[in-house]
Each structure stands twice: as structure tokens, then as C-alpha cells.
Image (cartoon, one colour):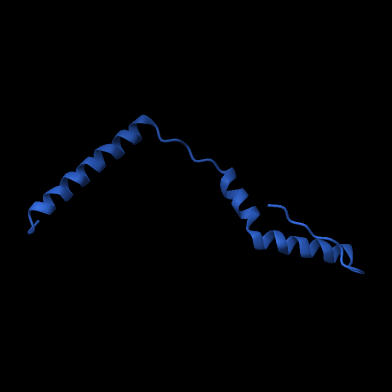
Length: 71
């Protein structure tokens, strides 16, 4: 995604910079770059296993709810 700002007639350099800055802000490019620059740690084996155990519990509980309406 390229952003271009060309000088318009008698426009000052400050005006050109401000216009370019507004264009960059409208695209949300800097915000996306900041978010993508922060890396999340990969979960370790213990965390992955704990998540799997929780999922199994939820699925077992929901399966019971299907057959027993008063639970």
C-alpha cells in the first residue's frame, strides 16, 4: 500500500508534511505495524495440555446437557 503526497502549487513543505501525515493516519498503517511488531509467546506444552483438558470437560458437560434437559 503506497501513500503518495505531491506538492500542490504554492504549498509549503510543512503543509505537505501535514497532509502526508493525515493520509498515513487515515490508512491505519502505523497502528497495524505496532500491533504486528509485538509477538505473543507460544504456549508451552503444559498450557496446551491444560487447555485440552478444559475443552474435554466442556464437551463432556455439554454432551450431558443434550440428553438430560434438567441439568
